[in-house]
Length: 230
Image 1 (tube, rainbow, N blue to C red):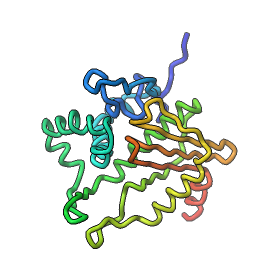
Image 2 (cartoon, rainbow, N blue to C red; image 1 turned 180 degrees about the vertical axis):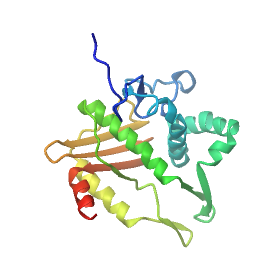
Image 3 (spheres, rainbow, N blue to C red; image 1 turned 90 degrees about the horizontal axis):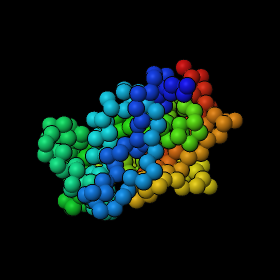
Image 4 (tube, one colour; image 1 turned 90 degrees about the vertical axis):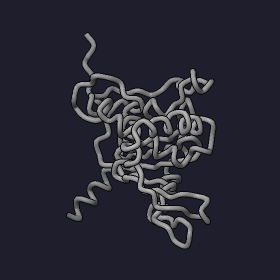
């Protein structure tokens, strides 16, 4: 008899398979004209970490498409064929995803504020799912995430970078530089992983639609250092 699997995020019994990234990030061949759903990654999941987080998946996709919509065929297709249609059906839900902060660059670009803790939670789930898929075990330590596509604020009609985040991104790039690029559908999503079992550290870098980058890092040393400070 096959042993029952537990969820990639918790110890609950798995009742389904969670896509990592969510399947809604990948255009359907019937409407897009090409198959970008080849060999999608799935991991065992409970309801709480799959179907019940569908609204988080919508928020996650909307946040990425807001930045990447005009960058490539896949993101352009999802923005106009999926996101705008969904926003028209549920304007109150999608309107709550962002806070419009006005324009920059002489009115040629718009700036929006997002729910950053919610976004980081989406990245956390994705990184842990990819870890589970690659190493066949769960990652339980806290993770820290950042992105060069986020900014600190607006100054003199331009966005201002968040220096600590920029430094963390550069450090992550160095850590992951030698790792192979993974992902069967790279125009939607590609990524790198690094796991050091002896040091109990895990690093993840992902890129969506050849533009939006995310970086996550976790280690026992960070947890110990944080705990020691009280």
